[in-house]
Image (cartoon, rainbow, N blue to C red; front, side):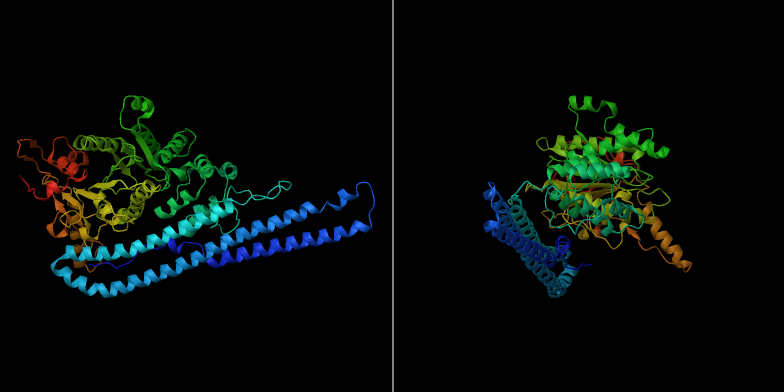
Length: 600
Protein backbone atom coordinates (compact mmCIF):
# COMPACT_ATOMS: atom_id res chain seq x y z
CA UNK A 1 0.00 0.00 0.00
CA UNK A 2 1.47 3.34 -1.08
CA UNK A 3 0.77 6.15 1.37
CA UNK A 4 -0.12 9.67 0.28
CA UNK A 5 2.79 11.79 -0.92
CA UNK A 6 2.43 14.26 1.92
CA UNK A 7 4.88 16.66 3.53
CA UNK A 8 5.11 17.79 7.14
CA UNK A 9 3.99 21.43 7.23
CA UNK A 10 2.76 21.45 10.83
CA UNK A 11 5.36 23.94 12.03
CA UNK A 12 4.60 26.33 9.16
CA UNK A 13 0.85 26.02 9.71
CA UNK A 14 1.34 27.08 13.34
CA UNK A 15 3.23 30.27 12.51
CA UNK A 16 1.54 33.53 13.55
CA UNK A 17 -0.55 35.14 10.79
CA UNK A 18 0.86 38.27 9.17
CA UNK A 19 -2.20 40.53 9.45
CA UNK A 20 -2.38 40.86 13.28
CA UNK A 21 1.33 41.74 13.36
CA UNK A 22 0.81 44.41 10.72
CA UNK A 23 -2.18 45.77 12.63
CA UNK A 24 -0.18 45.88 15.87
CA UNK A 25 2.69 47.69 14.13
CA UNK A 26 0.30 50.26 12.70
CA UNK A 27 -1.34 50.81 16.09
CA UNK A 28 2.03 51.26 17.80
CA UNK A 29 3.17 53.79 15.21
CA UNK A 30 -0.12 55.69 15.34
CA UNK A 31 -0.04 55.94 19.14
CA UNK A 32 3.59 57.06 19.18
CA UNK A 33 2.88 59.68 16.52
CA UNK A 34 -0.08 61.07 18.46
CA UNK A 35 2.00 61.13 21.64
CA UNK A 36 4.85 62.99 19.94
CA UNK A 37 2.48 65.50 18.38
CA UNK A 38 0.81 66.09 21.76
CA UNK A 39 4.16 66.75 23.46
CA UNK A 40 5.19 69.09 20.63
CA UNK A 41 1.91 71.00 21.01
CA UNK A 42 2.43 71.37 24.77
CA UNK A 43 6.01 72.59 24.21
CA UNK A 44 4.82 75.22 21.70
CA UNK A 45 2.19 76.47 24.14
CA UNK A 46 4.76 76.46 26.94
CA UNK A 47 7.07 78.59 24.84
CA UNK A 48 4.35 81.26 24.67
CA UNK A 49 5.16 82.08 28.29
CA UNK A 50 8.29 83.84 27.06
CA UNK A 51 6.57 87.24 27.00
CA UNK A 52 4.40 86.66 30.07
CA UNK A 53 6.78 85.31 32.70
CA UNK A 54 9.60 87.21 34.39
CA UNK A 55 11.60 85.82 37.29
CA UNK A 56 15.20 84.81 38.11
CA UNK A 57 14.41 81.20 37.13
CA UNK A 58 12.78 82.32 33.86
CA UNK A 59 15.18 80.46 31.53
CA UNK A 60 14.90 77.22 33.52
CA UNK A 61 11.09 77.34 33.40
CA UNK A 62 10.94 78.11 29.71
CA UNK A 63 13.28 75.16 28.91
CA UNK A 64 11.33 72.67 31.06
CA UNK A 65 9.61 71.11 28.04
CA UNK A 66 12.72 70.86 25.85
CA UNK A 67 13.80 67.46 27.17
CA UNK A 68 10.34 65.82 27.03
CA UNK A 69 9.95 67.12 23.48
CA UNK A 70 13.32 65.71 22.46
CA UNK A 71 12.60 62.37 24.12
CA UNK A 72 9.18 62.07 22.50
CA UNK A 73 10.88 62.47 19.14
CA UNK A 74 13.41 59.77 19.99
CA UNK A 75 10.57 57.58 21.22
CA UNK A 76 8.82 58.03 17.88
CA UNK A 77 12.02 57.00 16.07
CA UNK A 78 12.26 53.86 18.23
CA UNK A 79 8.63 52.93 17.60
CA UNK A 80 9.14 53.54 13.88
CA UNK A 81 12.08 51.12 13.97
CA UNK A 82 9.99 48.53 15.81
CA UNK A 83 7.06 48.96 13.42
CA UNK A 84 9.37 48.56 10.43
CA UNK A 85 10.87 45.37 11.89
CA UNK A 86 7.42 43.94 12.58
CA UNK A 87 6.18 44.81 9.09
CA UNK A 88 9.22 43.15 7.51
CA UNK A 89 8.53 40.02 9.59
CA UNK A 90 4.85 40.09 8.65
CA UNK A 91 5.67 40.36 4.96
CA UNK A 92 8.02 37.40 5.23
CA UNK A 93 5.36 35.39 7.09
CA UNK A 94 2.87 36.11 4.33
CA UNK A 95 5.37 35.02 1.66
CA UNK A 96 6.22 31.85 3.60
CA UNK A 97 2.55 30.95 3.97
CA UNK A 98 1.99 31.43 0.24
CA UNK A 99 5.01 29.25 -0.50
CA UNK A 100 3.79 26.62 1.97
CA UNK A 101 0.44 26.35 0.19
CA UNK A 102 2.27 26.08 -3.13
CA UNK A 103 4.38 23.14 -1.88
CA UNK A 104 1.26 21.38 -0.54
CA UNK A 105 -0.39 21.84 -3.93
CA UNK A 106 2.77 20.57 -5.60
CA UNK A 107 2.75 17.47 -3.37
CA UNK A 108 -0.85 16.75 -4.34
CA UNK A 109 -0.06 17.18 -8.03
CA UNK A 110 3.08 15.04 -7.77
CA UNK A 111 1.08 12.32 -6.03
CA UNK A 112 -1.40 12.25 -8.90
CA UNK A 113 1.38 12.24 -11.49
CA UNK A 114 3.68 9.68 -9.90
CA UNK A 115 1.26 7.27 -8.23
CA UNK A 116 0.21 5.28 -11.35
CA UNK A 117 3.86 4.68 -12.30
CA UNK A 118 4.89 3.74 -8.75
CA UNK A 119 1.96 1.37 -8.26
CA UNK A 120 2.76 -0.35 -11.53
CA UNK A 121 6.42 -0.78 -10.57
CA UNK A 122 5.43 -1.86 -7.04
CA UNK A 123 3.97 -5.13 -8.31
CA UNK A 124 7.35 -6.28 -9.67
CA UNK A 125 9.87 -4.27 -7.68
CA UNK A 126 8.47 -2.84 -4.42
CA UNK A 127 11.90 -1.66 -3.21
CA UNK A 128 12.37 0.51 -6.29
CA UNK A 129 8.81 1.80 -6.05
CA UNK A 130 9.22 2.86 -2.45
CA UNK A 131 12.60 4.43 -3.24
CA UNK A 132 10.99 6.56 -5.97
CA UNK A 133 8.23 7.59 -3.56
CA UNK A 134 10.73 8.43 -0.80
CA UNK A 135 12.88 10.49 -3.18
CA UNK A 136 9.86 12.52 -4.29
CA UNK A 137 8.79 13.11 -0.70
CA UNK A 138 12.33 14.09 0.34
CA UNK A 139 12.57 16.69 -2.44
CA UNK A 140 9.28 18.27 -1.36
CA UNK A 141 10.20 18.13 2.34
CA UNK A 142 13.48 19.91 1.55
CA UNK A 143 11.45 22.86 0.28
CA UNK A 144 9.47 22.94 3.52
CA UNK A 145 12.72 22.83 5.51
CA UNK A 146 13.98 25.84 3.56
CA UNK A 147 10.80 27.73 4.46
CA UNK A 148 11.27 26.82 8.12
CA UNK A 149 14.80 28.21 7.96
CA UNK A 150 13.48 31.38 6.34
CA UNK A 151 11.11 31.88 9.25
CA UNK A 152 13.84 31.33 11.85
CA UNK A 153 16.06 33.85 10.06
CA UNK A 154 13.24 36.40 9.78
CA UNK A 155 12.34 36.02 13.43
CA UNK A 156 16.00 36.36 14.50
CA UNK A 157 16.38 39.52 12.38
CA UNK A 158 13.24 41.03 13.88
CA UNK A 159 14.25 40.19 17.45
CA UNK A 160 17.72 41.65 16.86
CA UNK A 161 16.18 44.90 15.60
CA UNK A 162 13.89 45.09 18.61
CA UNK A 163 16.72 44.22 20.96
CA UNK A 164 18.82 47.12 19.66
CA UNK A 165 16.17 49.65 20.73
CA UNK A 166 17.31 51.62 23.80
CA UNK A 167 14.93 53.40 26.16
CA UNK A 168 15.21 57.14 25.76
CA UNK A 169 14.65 57.80 29.47
CA UNK A 170 14.94 55.93 32.75
CA UNK A 171 12.83 58.49 34.62
CA UNK A 172 9.68 56.41 34.13
CA UNK A 173 9.50 52.80 35.34
CA UNK A 174 8.74 50.32 32.56
CA UNK A 175 5.53 48.32 33.01
CA UNK A 176 6.67 45.60 30.60
CA UNK A 177 7.70 42.74 32.88
CA UNK A 178 8.72 40.13 30.30
CA UNK A 179 12.48 39.62 29.78
CA UNK A 180 12.07 39.91 26.01
CA UNK A 181 9.41 40.57 23.40
CA UNK A 182 7.60 37.38 22.46
CA UNK A 183 6.46 37.89 18.88
CA UNK A 184 4.07 34.92 18.99
CA UNK A 185 2.15 35.90 22.10
CA UNK A 186 -1.56 36.30 21.59
CA UNK A 187 -1.79 38.75 24.48
CA UNK A 188 -1.94 38.74 28.23
CA UNK A 189 -3.97 36.04 29.98
CA UNK A 190 -4.17 34.51 33.38
CA UNK A 191 -1.60 31.72 33.69
CA UNK A 192 -3.41 29.99 36.52
CA UNK A 193 -6.64 29.80 34.52
CA UNK A 194 -4.73 28.50 31.51
CA UNK A 195 -3.11 25.81 33.69
CA UNK A 196 -6.58 24.75 34.85
CA UNK A 197 -7.67 24.41 31.22
CA UNK A 198 -4.54 22.43 30.30
CA UNK A 199 -5.01 19.96 33.16
CA UNK A 200 -8.74 19.30 32.94
CA UNK A 201 -9.72 15.76 31.88
CA UNK A 202 -11.04 16.86 28.49
CA UNK A 203 -8.21 19.31 27.76
CA UNK A 204 -7.56 19.76 24.05
CA UNK A 205 -4.19 20.07 22.33
CA UNK A 206 -4.93 23.77 21.93
CA UNK A 207 -5.52 24.13 25.69
CA UNK A 208 -2.06 22.70 26.33
CA UNK A 209 -0.45 24.77 23.55
CA UNK A 210 -2.05 27.95 24.94
CA UNK A 211 -0.54 27.22 28.35
CA UNK A 212 2.90 26.79 26.81
CA UNK A 213 2.54 30.07 24.93
CA UNK A 214 1.79 31.89 28.16
CA UNK A 215 4.72 30.20 29.89
CA UNK A 216 6.93 31.60 27.14
CA UNK A 217 5.98 35.12 28.20
CA UNK A 218 6.89 34.66 31.86
CA UNK A 219 10.11 35.71 33.53
CA UNK A 220 11.75 33.66 36.35
CA UNK A 221 10.07 35.67 39.11
CA UNK A 222 6.64 35.18 37.55
CA UNK A 223 7.26 31.45 37.11
CA UNK A 224 8.32 31.12 40.74
CA UNK A 225 5.24 33.01 41.92
CA UNK A 226 2.99 30.82 39.79
CA UNK A 227 4.59 27.61 41.07
CA UNK A 228 4.21 28.84 44.66
CA UNK A 229 0.53 29.58 44.08
CA UNK A 230 -0.13 26.29 42.22
CA UNK A 231 2.03 23.52 43.79
CA UNK A 232 0.63 20.92 41.37
CA UNK A 233 2.44 22.74 38.55
CA UNK A 234 5.77 21.19 39.60
CA UNK A 235 4.53 17.75 38.47
CA UNK A 236 2.86 18.92 35.24
CA UNK A 237 4.09 16.72 32.37
CA UNK A 238 1.62 17.25 29.52
CA UNK A 239 3.44 18.07 26.32
CA UNK A 240 2.95 18.87 22.67
CA UNK A 241 4.54 17.36 19.58
CA UNK A 242 8.33 17.00 19.55
CA UNK A 243 8.80 19.84 17.06
CA UNK A 244 6.56 22.22 19.01
CA UNK A 245 8.31 21.40 22.28
CA UNK A 246 11.77 21.87 20.78
CA UNK A 247 10.68 25.18 19.29
CA UNK A 248 9.31 26.26 22.67
CA UNK A 249 12.60 25.47 24.42
CA UNK A 250 14.58 27.24 21.71
CA UNK A 251 12.48 30.39 22.12
CA UNK A 252 13.28 30.74 25.84
CA UNK A 253 16.07 32.89 27.24
CA UNK A 254 18.67 31.23 29.51
CA UNK A 255 17.03 32.89 32.52
CA UNK A 256 13.62 31.54 31.51
CA UNK A 257 15.02 28.04 31.04
CA UNK A 258 16.58 28.05 34.50
CA UNK A 259 13.40 29.47 36.04
CA UNK A 260 11.21 26.90 34.32
CA UNK A 261 13.44 24.00 35.43
CA UNK A 262 13.23 25.18 39.04
CA UNK A 263 9.51 25.97 39.04
CA UNK A 264 8.15 23.23 36.75
CA UNK A 265 10.67 20.35 36.77
CA UNK A 266 8.04 17.85 35.61
CA UNK A 267 7.53 19.77 32.38
CA UNK A 268 11.24 20.33 31.69
CA UNK A 269 12.08 16.72 32.56
CA UNK A 270 9.88 15.48 29.71
CA UNK A 271 10.41 18.35 27.27
CA UNK A 272 11.73 17.31 23.86
CA UNK A 273 14.43 19.71 22.72
CA UNK A 274 15.83 20.36 26.19
CA UNK A 275 19.32 18.88 26.76
CA UNK A 276 19.14 15.48 28.41
CA UNK A 277 21.38 16.58 31.28
CA UNK A 278 18.85 19.32 32.07
CA UNK A 279 15.98 16.82 31.84
CA UNK A 280 17.85 14.39 34.08
CA UNK A 281 18.32 17.00 36.81
CA UNK A 282 14.67 18.08 36.57
CA UNK A 283 13.36 14.50 36.72
CA UNK A 284 15.57 13.65 39.69
CA UNK A 285 14.06 16.65 41.47
CA UNK A 286 10.57 15.28 40.75
CA UNK A 287 11.63 11.78 41.85
CA UNK A 288 12.91 13.15 45.16
CA UNK A 289 9.61 14.99 45.63
CA UNK A 290 7.40 11.94 45.04
CA UNK A 291 9.61 9.79 47.27
CA UNK A 292 8.77 12.02 50.25
CA UNK A 293 6.47 10.31 52.80
CA UNK A 294 3.87 13.06 52.46
CA UNK A 295 3.36 12.59 48.72
CA UNK A 296 -0.01 11.05 47.86
CA UNK A 297 0.66 7.80 45.99
CA UNK A 298 -0.43 4.17 45.88
CA UNK A 299 1.85 1.45 47.19
CA UNK A 300 2.55 0.28 43.64
CA UNK A 301 3.53 3.79 42.64
CA UNK A 302 5.85 4.07 45.63
CA UNK A 303 7.42 0.74 44.69
CA UNK A 304 7.97 2.06 41.18
CA UNK A 305 9.58 5.26 42.48
CA UNK A 306 11.95 3.24 44.65
CA UNK A 307 12.74 0.93 41.74
CA UNK A 308 13.61 3.88 39.50
CA UNK A 309 15.75 5.41 42.24
CA UNK A 310 17.62 2.14 42.72
CA UNK A 311 18.04 1.67 38.96
CA UNK A 312 19.77 5.05 38.86
CA UNK A 313 22.19 3.79 41.48
CA UNK A 314 20.27 4.65 44.63
CA UNK A 315 22.41 6.07 47.40
CA UNK A 316 25.55 4.85 45.60
CA UNK A 317 25.12 7.09 42.55
CA UNK A 318 28.10 9.30 43.34
CA UNK A 319 30.27 6.26 44.06
CA UNK A 320 29.31 4.76 40.68
CA UNK A 321 30.50 7.91 38.92
CA UNK A 322 33.86 7.75 40.73
CA UNK A 323 34.21 4.08 39.74
CA UNK A 324 33.87 5.05 36.08
CA UNK A 325 30.60 3.22 35.53
CA UNK A 326 28.38 4.48 32.64
CA UNK A 327 26.49 7.62 33.53
CA UNK A 328 22.74 7.10 33.98
CA UNK A 329 20.23 9.78 33.03
CA UNK A 330 16.53 9.87 33.93
CA UNK A 331 15.41 11.37 30.63
CA UNK A 332 11.65 11.04 31.16
CA UNK A 333 9.46 10.47 34.20
CA UNK A 334 5.67 10.57 34.56
CA UNK A 335 4.89 9.64 38.16
CA UNK A 336 1.11 10.17 38.03
CA UNK A 337 0.20 7.02 36.06
CA UNK A 338 -1.10 3.94 37.83
CA UNK A 339 2.05 2.32 36.47
CA UNK A 340 4.53 5.25 36.50
CA UNK A 341 6.40 5.75 33.23
CA UNK A 342 10.12 6.39 32.94
CA UNK A 343 13.11 6.14 30.62
CA UNK A 344 16.71 5.83 31.82
CA UNK A 345 19.66 6.30 29.49
CA UNK A 346 22.77 4.28 30.28
CA UNK A 347 25.49 6.50 28.84
CA UNK A 348 25.52 10.20 27.98
CA UNK A 349 22.62 10.79 25.58
CA UNK A 350 23.80 14.38 24.95
CA UNK A 351 27.14 13.16 23.59
CA UNK A 352 26.77 9.57 22.33
CA UNK A 353 27.26 9.12 18.60
CA UNK A 354 25.44 5.75 18.62
CA UNK A 355 22.14 5.49 20.50
CA UNK A 356 19.72 2.61 20.99
CA UNK A 357 16.24 2.57 22.50
CA UNK A 358 15.40 -0.70 24.26
CA UNK A 359 11.61 -1.27 24.25
CA UNK A 360 10.12 -4.09 26.37
CA UNK A 361 6.94 -6.07 25.84
CA UNK A 362 4.05 -7.25 27.98
CA UNK A 363 4.06 -7.36 31.78
CA UNK A 364 6.95 -4.93 32.13
CA UNK A 365 6.47 -2.02 34.52
CA UNK A 366 8.66 0.51 36.24
CA UNK A 367 8.39 -1.54 39.44
CA UNK A 368 10.99 -3.70 37.67
CA UNK A 369 13.01 -0.83 36.21
CA UNK A 370 16.27 -2.30 37.45
CA UNK A 371 15.99 -5.35 35.20
CA UNK A 372 15.47 -3.28 32.05
CA UNK A 373 18.33 -0.93 32.98
CA UNK A 374 20.58 -3.95 33.54
CA UNK A 375 19.66 -5.23 30.07
CA UNK A 376 20.48 -1.80 28.64
CA UNK A 377 23.84 -1.83 30.40
CA UNK A 378 24.65 -5.28 29.07
CA UNK A 379 23.84 -4.23 25.50
CA UNK A 380 25.91 -1.06 25.90
CA UNK A 381 28.88 -3.11 27.09
CA UNK A 382 28.67 -5.42 24.07
CA UNK A 383 28.34 -2.46 21.69
CA UNK A 384 31.44 -0.87 23.19
CA UNK A 385 33.36 -4.11 22.72
CA UNK A 386 32.24 -4.29 19.10
CA UNK A 387 33.02 -0.62 18.42
CA UNK A 388 35.62 0.48 20.99
CA UNK A 389 36.12 3.91 19.44
CA UNK A 390 32.44 4.83 19.43
CA UNK A 391 30.59 6.62 22.22
CA UNK A 392 27.28 4.86 22.81
CA UNK A 393 24.18 5.11 24.98
CA UNK A 394 21.27 2.70 25.46
CA UNK A 395 17.89 3.92 26.71
CA UNK A 396 15.80 1.61 28.90
CA UNK A 397 12.42 2.82 27.64
CA UNK A 398 9.54 2.18 30.02
CA UNK A 399 7.74 5.15 28.51
CA UNK A 400 4.52 3.36 27.60
CA UNK A 401 2.16 1.19 29.61
CA UNK A 402 2.67 -2.38 28.49
CA UNK A 403 -0.27 -4.80 28.45
CA UNK A 404 -0.78 -7.83 30.64
CA UNK A 405 -1.34 -11.28 29.20
CA UNK A 406 -5.10 -10.73 28.86
CA UNK A 407 -4.60 -7.45 26.96
CA UNK A 408 -1.78 -8.48 24.66
CA UNK A 409 -4.14 -9.44 21.81
CA UNK A 410 -5.46 -5.88 21.59
CA UNK A 411 -3.71 -2.82 20.15
CA UNK A 412 -4.97 -0.27 22.68
CA UNK A 413 -1.68 -0.09 24.57
CA UNK A 414 0.26 0.17 21.31
CA UNK A 415 -2.01 2.89 19.94
CA UNK A 416 -1.61 4.94 23.13
CA UNK A 417 2.13 4.42 23.39
CA UNK A 418 3.15 4.96 19.75
CA UNK A 419 2.73 8.78 19.58
CA UNK A 420 4.84 9.32 22.71
CA UNK A 421 7.56 6.98 21.47
CA UNK A 422 7.58 8.70 18.08
CA UNK A 423 7.98 12.03 19.90
CA UNK A 424 10.88 10.61 21.92
CA UNK A 425 12.70 9.50 18.76
CA UNK A 426 12.03 12.79 16.97
CA UNK A 427 13.03 14.65 20.12
CA UNK A 428 16.42 12.96 20.12
CA UNK A 429 17.03 14.18 16.58
CA UNK A 430 15.84 17.72 17.35
CA UNK A 431 17.80 17.98 20.59
CA UNK A 432 21.09 16.80 19.14
CA UNK A 433 20.83 18.87 15.95
CA UNK A 434 19.65 22.10 17.66
CA UNK A 435 23.08 23.75 17.36
CA UNK A 436 23.73 22.60 13.81
CA UNK A 437 25.54 19.41 14.84
CA UNK A 438 24.94 16.11 13.02
CA UNK A 439 22.31 13.74 14.37
CA UNK A 440 23.53 10.62 16.17
CA UNK A 441 22.91 7.13 14.89
CA UNK A 442 19.54 6.03 16.27
CA UNK A 443 18.55 2.38 16.65
CA UNK A 444 15.54 0.70 18.23
CA UNK A 445 15.55 -2.77 19.78
CA UNK A 446 11.99 -3.90 20.53
CA UNK A 447 10.84 -7.13 22.14
CA UNK A 448 7.49 -8.93 22.18
CA UNK A 449 4.57 -6.44 22.34
CA UNK A 450 7.17 -3.69 22.10
CA UNK A 451 7.42 -4.53 18.40
CA UNK A 452 3.66 -4.03 18.02
CA UNK A 453 3.94 -0.55 19.51
CA UNK A 454 7.20 0.36 17.78
CA UNK A 455 5.97 -0.42 14.27
CA UNK A 456 3.09 2.00 14.83
CA UNK A 457 5.50 4.66 16.15
CA UNK A 458 7.92 4.30 13.24
CA UNK A 459 5.04 4.97 10.86
CA UNK A 460 4.50 8.48 12.26
CA UNK A 461 7.98 9.80 13.08
CA UNK A 462 9.22 12.97 11.39
CA UNK A 463 12.81 11.78 11.08
CA UNK A 464 14.08 8.34 10.03
CA UNK A 465 16.08 6.15 12.40
CA UNK A 466 19.06 4.13 11.24
CA UNK A 467 17.99 0.61 12.20
CA UNK A 468 15.31 -1.36 14.01
CA UNK A 469 15.58 -4.83 15.54
CA UNK A 470 12.45 -6.84 16.42
CA UNK A 471 12.90 -9.94 18.58
CA UNK A 472 10.29 -12.39 19.88
CA UNK A 473 7.55 -10.31 18.25
CA UNK A 474 3.95 -10.54 19.40
CA UNK A 475 2.99 -9.54 15.87
CA UNK A 476 2.43 -6.32 13.99
CA UNK A 477 -0.68 -4.88 12.40
CA UNK A 478 -1.40 -6.77 9.16
CA UNK A 479 -1.50 -3.61 7.05
CA UNK A 480 2.02 -2.58 8.16
CA UNK A 481 5.11 -3.89 6.36
CA UNK A 482 8.80 -3.05 6.69
CA UNK A 483 8.45 -0.63 3.78
CA UNK A 484 5.98 1.50 5.74
CA UNK A 485 8.43 2.26 8.55
CA UNK A 486 10.60 5.38 8.70
CA UNK A 487 13.91 3.50 8.80
CA UNK A 488 16.96 4.07 6.60
CA UNK A 489 17.73 1.69 3.77
CA UNK A 490 20.83 -0.44 3.62
CA UNK A 491 23.14 -0.90 0.66
CA UNK A 492 20.75 -3.58 -0.62
CA UNK A 493 17.97 -0.98 -0.96
CA UNK A 494 15.86 -2.56 1.79
CA UNK A 495 14.94 -1.02 5.12
CA UNK A 496 17.49 -1.86 7.82
CA UNK A 497 14.94 -3.73 9.93
CA UNK A 498 16.22 -6.97 11.47
CA UNK A 499 13.90 -9.66 12.83
CA UNK A 500 14.32 -12.85 14.83
CA UNK A 501 12.25 -15.22 16.95
CA UNK A 502 13.78 -18.28 18.58
CA UNK A 503 12.21 -21.67 17.90
CA UNK A 504 12.07 -22.29 21.65
CA UNK A 505 10.16 -19.03 22.22
CA UNK A 506 6.66 -20.51 22.28
CA UNK A 507 5.07 -17.42 23.81
CA UNK A 508 6.14 -14.97 21.10
CA UNK A 509 3.48 -15.92 18.58
CA UNK A 510 0.67 -15.97 21.13
CA UNK A 511 -0.38 -12.44 20.18
CA UNK A 512 -0.42 -13.36 16.51
CA UNK A 513 -2.28 -16.64 16.83
CA UNK A 514 -4.75 -15.20 19.33
CA UNK A 515 -5.86 -12.40 17.01
CA UNK A 516 -6.43 -14.90 14.20
CA UNK A 517 -8.36 -17.24 16.50
CA UNK A 518 -10.57 -14.46 17.88
CA UNK A 519 -11.27 -13.14 14.39
CA UNK A 520 -12.17 -16.65 13.20
CA UNK A 521 -14.39 -17.30 16.24
CA UNK A 522 -16.19 -13.96 15.97
CA UNK A 523 -16.86 -14.39 12.28
CA UNK A 524 -18.43 -17.76 13.00
CA UNK A 525 -20.68 -16.21 15.63
CA UNK A 526 -21.71 -13.36 13.37
CA UNK A 527 -19.75 -10.90 15.52
CA UNK A 528 -17.40 -8.15 14.44
CA UNK A 529 -13.84 -9.34 14.02
CA UNK A 530 -10.87 -7.57 15.56
CA UNK A 531 -9.90 -4.33 13.87
CA UNK A 532 -6.25 -5.41 13.81
CA UNK A 533 -5.18 -8.95 12.95
CA UNK A 534 -1.44 -9.31 13.36
CA UNK A 535 1.22 -10.85 11.17
CA UNK A 536 4.64 -12.20 12.00
CA UNK A 537 7.46 -9.79 10.99
CA UNK A 538 9.81 -12.76 10.61
CA UNK A 539 7.76 -13.91 7.60
CA UNK A 540 9.86 -13.32 4.49
CA UNK A 541 7.13 -11.38 2.68
CA UNK A 542 6.94 -8.84 5.53
CA UNK A 543 10.26 -7.42 4.36
CA UNK A 544 12.55 -7.68 7.40
CA UNK A 545 16.08 -9.03 7.39
CA UNK A 546 16.13 -12.25 9.37
CA UNK A 547 18.86 -13.55 11.66
CA UNK A 548 18.95 -16.59 13.90
CA UNK A 549 18.38 -16.78 17.64
CA UNK A 550 18.76 -20.55 17.66
CA UNK A 551 22.53 -20.72 18.06
CA UNK A 552 25.21 -21.84 15.62
CA UNK A 553 28.95 -22.31 15.28
CA UNK A 554 30.80 -19.51 13.52
CA UNK A 555 33.36 -20.26 10.78
CA UNK A 556 36.15 -19.66 13.30
CA UNK A 557 34.70 -22.25 15.69
CA UNK A 558 32.93 -19.99 18.20
CA UNK A 559 29.87 -21.68 19.69
CA UNK A 560 26.92 -19.27 19.93
CA UNK A 561 24.12 -20.31 22.26
CA UNK A 562 20.42 -20.54 21.40
CA UNK A 563 17.69 -18.46 23.01
CA UNK A 564 15.58 -20.85 25.06
CA UNK A 565 12.64 -18.78 26.30
CA UNK A 566 10.67 -15.60 25.65
CA UNK A 567 12.25 -13.18 28.16
CA UNK A 568 14.12 -10.15 26.82
CA UNK A 569 17.10 -11.02 29.02
CA UNK A 570 17.28 -14.43 27.32
CA UNK A 571 17.61 -12.78 23.90
CA UNK A 572 20.42 -10.66 25.38
CA UNK A 573 22.12 -13.68 26.91
CA UNK A 574 25.91 -13.58 26.79
CA UNK A 575 27.48 -15.64 23.97
CA UNK A 576 24.11 -16.14 22.25
CA UNK A 577 23.52 -15.84 18.52
CA UNK A 578 20.65 -13.44 19.22
CA UNK A 579 22.90 -11.04 21.14
CA UNK A 580 25.49 -11.22 18.39
CA UNK A 581 22.86 -10.31 15.78
CA UNK A 582 21.47 -7.48 17.90
CA UNK A 583 24.92 -5.97 18.43
CA UNK A 584 25.81 -6.18 14.73
CA UNK A 585 22.51 -4.58 13.74
CA UNK A 586 22.82 -1.73 16.25
CA UNK A 587 26.46 -0.87 15.52
CA UNK A 588 26.25 -0.45 11.77
CA UNK A 589 27.29 -3.96 10.81
CA UNK A 590 23.90 -5.51 10.17
CA UNK A 591 24.96 -6.20 6.60
CA UNK A 592 26.92 -9.17 7.95
CA UNK A 593 23.63 -10.81 8.93
CA UNK A 594 22.00 -10.55 5.51
CA UNK A 595 23.76 -13.53 3.94
CA UNK A 596 23.75 -15.76 7.02
CA UNK A 597 21.22 -18.55 7.31
CA UNK A 598 19.80 -20.31 10.35
CA UNK A 599 21.94 -23.10 11.75
CA UNK A 600 25.06 -21.89 9.98
